[in-house]
Length: 210
Image 1 (tube, rainbow, N blue to C red):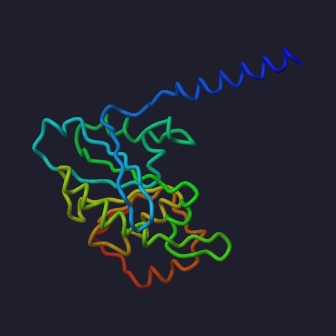
Image 2: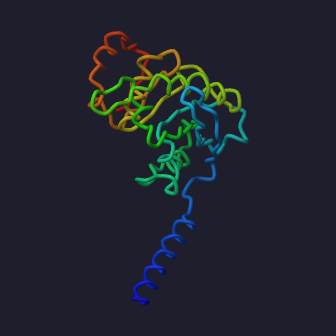
């Protein structure tokens, strides 16, 4: 019994050590800050990627807003393995952009990233989420960083429910988001999306990447 207990204690210590010593895989060009999100009654952690040329250049940059910020840059914060956004951006010589990763609300992720409530799954707080992005986060980013702030150079990207919100954002607010990246698009949870498509017609200037 003592041997078994000692083994269990050893395994527990080893697991805890691995957790404590987890190594960040984020690029040196990634930093983070926190910002109040009064529309969501919480504080949000925001990751920001700045191009390698940012500090030495007088140029302004397009901005890509991305949902699920935990998954974008760092294995330490992602529960599924990081997407490698920073490594890809580091490899670019041209078409460099600022990337803003928005922390999802964990248990409130479904709520934040759905524009309408679903009778089975709930949700439907997407408008408040976008209110935060448009009226709190984006003004902060445009004030503190060298951005091209008009819609032509502002993109919203997301995956799954994040993709749904990216699609919703660019359709409903084309004056803010001129482009959307959707990988993949999750329409299944929202049955009212045809109403949105009827109310907000696509503009030819809008760019969608699926």
